[in-house]
Amino acid sequence: MVVMPLCSLCGRRPGVKKLEFSEKFVGYSDMFAGGLVCDVCSVLIRDESYRRSHWVLTNSIVKKLSKSELLSVLRDPPVNSLIYVKSSGRRLGFIKCLRFTSTRSIVALCGEEEGPLLVERDKLREIVDIAVKAYSILKRKTPLLEGCSARDWVYEDICRLIELYRGVSAWSIVVRAL
Image (cartoon, rainbow, N blue to C red; front, side, top):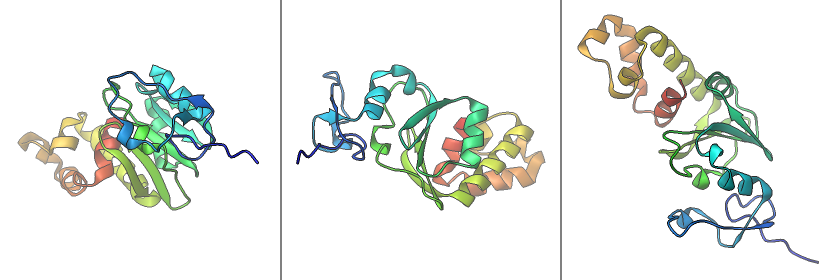
């Protein structure tokens, strides 16, 4: 019986391709031991468009998402999925997240800067709805991330909600998705 080594990135599928990074790569500590990656992870690390895109990985299928698709997926994430929300798209911020997956009650979310987050489904839906509402009223992301300025407080109810949620880990990822 031949035992196939597991993927060094996700640890879920058999490793079938040689792992290759440039000499400047610093993310080895985020990986499992070994020198092979699965077909799915190989595509994610070789194709630079994935680090510059929002995407959802469901089972073994990766789908790049537009902003509107991303918000829809954040409201109702598929089971067995990982949602990646890019920031600047300059680095492979998803590597440490590939080992996580959503369940019926928990969502696996990954932000380029934040890393992996596990969030209750209902809580994530609530965060998305509040962020969308606040953004539609204030028309800027800055108050959502840094807090309301004096002129924004004419919308006191929204500003109080923002202050309540700004400390929640998933908030900045959701705001970036707007």
